[in-house]
Image 1: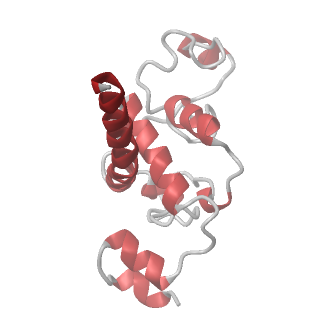
Image 2 (image 1 turned 30 degrees about the vertical axis):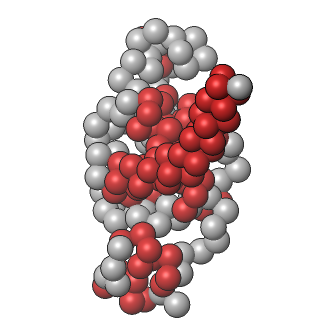
Length: 162
């Protein structure tokens, strides 16, 4: 009886903490998007490809991406050689984890790889993907309400949105 009760309590604790953990990942992912990863520099603060700096490469419109979770994680980890997307996993091309390719293979093929703002840990990459899934992908165009929710206040950039 005690074992069964402990199992029920443990299962309940896991089910109750899952939404909080997921929300924590979204919050962490939002922060990494805005700061450490500097993702908005290329993809735009709204993830729609409207970037903030004309010097940086053009990033994809992630609001309309068809990539699934695994493909997004792989793309963030390993980048897109020759296309401006940096590899945020600092070991991506040292051990062949990206389709068996190493940095020498990229160089041999004439592909360059942009430097990331900072390398990200696997849990940070997953948090960014959680943020994208919850707040960006398939969410339609940015609205004033979504803008205020993203920035946490009504900032100037939200004024132009309806």
